Length: 277
Image 1: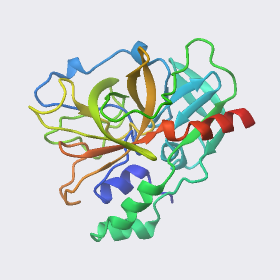
Image 2: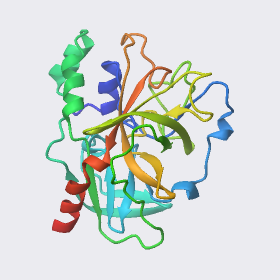
Image 3: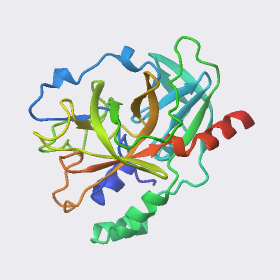
């Protein structure tokens, strides 16, 4: 039986966010800010695609959704539909990057025994991205615009999701629920190199006024940056890292680092797949 990414990451004391895989979307928030300040309506991100059970993707062309590979590969069968703008859209084809690597049971066992380095190295070297080709073009909303210039470092990221939620002092319940109210938060990008965009969930008084972090079930959800006078899609929620002992680990607590698929690194692959199809 295939293990769900959420179980994998939690056991190893790091999580796939955005979701790694358990339902996805909600965003974990500051303790000292009211939850209502983070809650948003779907109109703020119409291009958000909800994957069945949990996880997200983003519409980037009328017939194409980009997502994290782990958000679709863990399911027993390939994803056959997504929900965009409240409408179910049939998926005709799932294309997973050939460089995607999933955690083996051996690596999970090692991580549980205390040796997490091999599992983390595998995650860091994996091309965790996939494209979903829709059976019919989406004509009722505009696709998100890809951020291409690679200048993400130091920018403010807007994180959107509908998965697990909680507050940074305690993280969120690792057992769900992983699909909740749509929320958005902000964070400062502290690393942008190769495959990954990184940010850290800082505890108050540090951090931004609406500081937050993706939660379980947010895998494949959008990380946006403001450029060219608009919000552009720069990343996808993927996994988190924490130094906490696995016995006490709580996902998305203060001090944890979020790793997000860096789309500027994959623009050439994305365009070649869409052109070939």
